[in-house]
Amino acid sequence: MSDINFKIEGIEDFESRLNQISRKVPDGQEKILRKAGNNLKKKCKEKTPTGKSSKHIKDQYKLSGISYDRDGMEIKLYNESSKLHLIEKGHKMVTKSGKEVGFVPGVKMVERSFKEVEQELPILIDGWMNKMLK
Image (cartoon, rainbow, N blue to C red; front, side, top):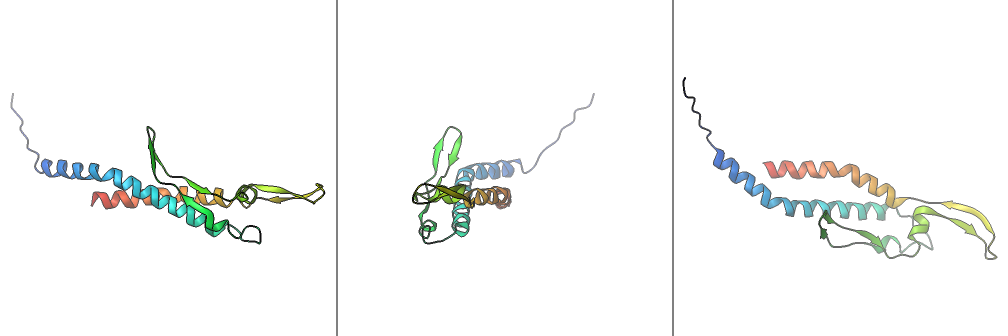
């Protein structure tokens, strides 16, 4: 029976590179999350209609800091306007006497923006991964 010997060269370099990448992963995840959050905020502002009763709503979008829990990390988009839900989801039109005269459909600017960012996220992640592996 004959012995077969083989030698893998460069394994130390590969191992060193993997260690570098694993140290950069948490920072990269935070950057992607912040970028996605900022994209969402920007898209929501662009899609939010302005009118006499809603002109300041655009300026009230805010991002929270990144929070961590056992499931991962998250960033929250919020708006302090008391009228945002009416514009997003729609509302009844009511006269001063309380009579319902119609319905104003929702603009769904947050929902639509979220879907757009959700579709763009794989591109952000791919770009980050390609950068990491160079």
